Length: 206
Image (tube, rainbow, N blue to C red; front, side, top):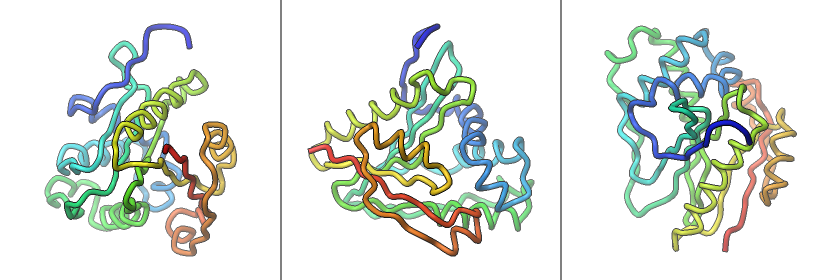
């Protein structure tokens, strides 16, 4: 990597807008298939989600920063003894997107939500800005997740899902010691996102 140093820091509300824009790069293909939201509307939706949905105590989002710019992000979650219930934000904060789009977005988010089992640290998402891909930013974020999970006595593996249409990502994770634990096929996923096949990948830590 060249240029200014890259730091990995915890999520802060001042980054909400930048992370909202960043997530569009990672997920526009899925959610623009599901809705008619354009890039700006989709970024604003994610920003409002960060603004108005409380952070789950059994989760953590980190950002990769370079000269104050968010160039990457990773989110993880794990199972705790506390019952973590999904909280839907008040409609008034999202009325601009339309009821039908809002319903479809939350259906899509709910479908993609994975419930970690005991000992599992699940990588909800990892996204690097297109202008900074190939520079090791993703590796830095994944290395942080590895170190975090390894330091927790209750966690013994990292896991994630990769879309079947993205074999390059699966190969990348394999080089980082993830192995494909299960291949799944979902008609509902195909209906929602035009993504029928998924690979569930696991990296053992202990």
